[in-house]
Amino acid sequence: MTLKVFDLSCEHDHVFEGWFSSQDSYQDQLSQGLVHCPVCHSDRITRRVSAPRLNVSHLRAEPAAPRAGSAPRDRAAVAAPSGDQMARLQAEVLRQIRRIVRQTDDVGARFADEARRMHSGEIEERPIRGTASAEECRELVDEGISIMPIPDILDDDRLQ
Picture: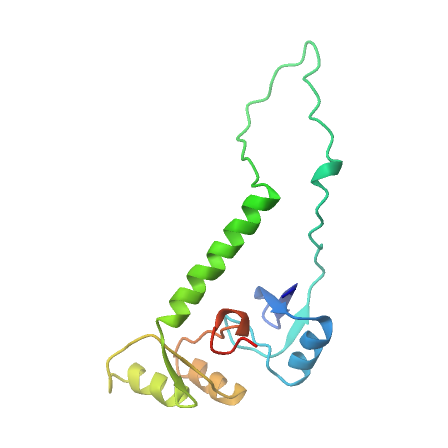
């Protein structure tokens, strides 16, 4: 599965990534009010200018040798991971996030009610996931209940 990763921001300038199967999928989800800021849950989202990742490592020139008579500069150096290392790292991050999501209790459409019951101390807190309308999500945030949308790519039950 190939994904498009877009840099997005909300009306409050919270910046986050959105992962979509295509540009059309992004537009469809945006028009249906399904794209929300993970910080404030606003659905007023805009796409930011972002640079695509291009695999151009084969075009890099060898580093130039220091010129005669020039003093070496003392700088902190960080080795960037190779393309293969980065791919393995990203795959491992996705595996770990999926593992965490699998350890939550799927409460389905009861999500908002269960979150409120936990917030009020009526039931014991536990990690849950489920579905809620945009309005229910706004109300939960307004009530001081922290929630976070889970992209389909991270929820094994919702993957197609």
